[in-house]
Image 1: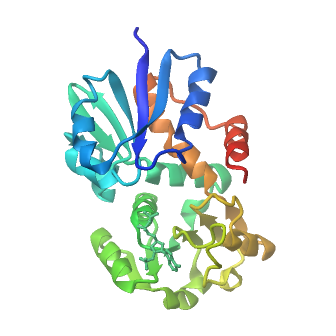
Image 2: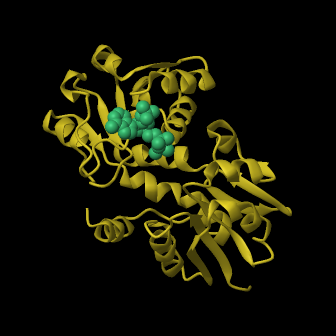
Length: 276
Ligand code: ATR
């Protein structure tokens, strides 16, 4: 079989860790394939998609700022993409260009690995209401959470996101988090707050019950200020790096035919690369 070529496209794209992850797996499984970063400007994204097959590409990942455009342009959508309204994984099947969103899968798989009973928590508090929060809320709904509360600096965005998901999901201003913390079983930060130099979160994990799990989808630094405070309080914490690693699994399997494993060795490679 000819070499199978996959890609990640975005603009800018230099920061993407995806080539490291897929390159690691291609070597590990001895697959005749490649996975390269391609910088694609927004004006030419639809052209780029139209020429995938002609350019010999079997599929790839889509990142900022193309996830919504990819959602509109694919010919078929997987259920998660439909629910999240954005596409991060492309592949061909029966002559059609398909799009999926594997962020919700990655989020859930990371918690499955490090906090196996996480989905018994039933009540979740989500900080933030952007694209990442959408994937998280979808994952929480799929895993049976009864109450999903979204709090956001811009309350309207939290309300709109909650509306889109319907029953069991509510939207509130950030200040409402204090009232929700005492019965929260799972706290998820999806905002960029807490990354290097962007300040602390206006949420105090010490108001959470002792059994609560705290996770952050930010992974630079690996232990965000929120996770550090939660861990110091004796709460179970899960960092966001596993979500990045696990979200790559379904794409690799579709392009190269092997379901790859997220190993400690892969994690160490990416940690070293990030310098976190
Ligand atoms: P992503 O796709 O990564 O979720 P996004 O759509 O830009 O990115 O969303 C970023 C989220 O972080 C939003 O919830 C944003 O709050 P607003 O909707 O009010 O903008 C939140 N966020 C970013 N910087 C913040 C800050 N300094 N304080 C509070 N929330 C912040």
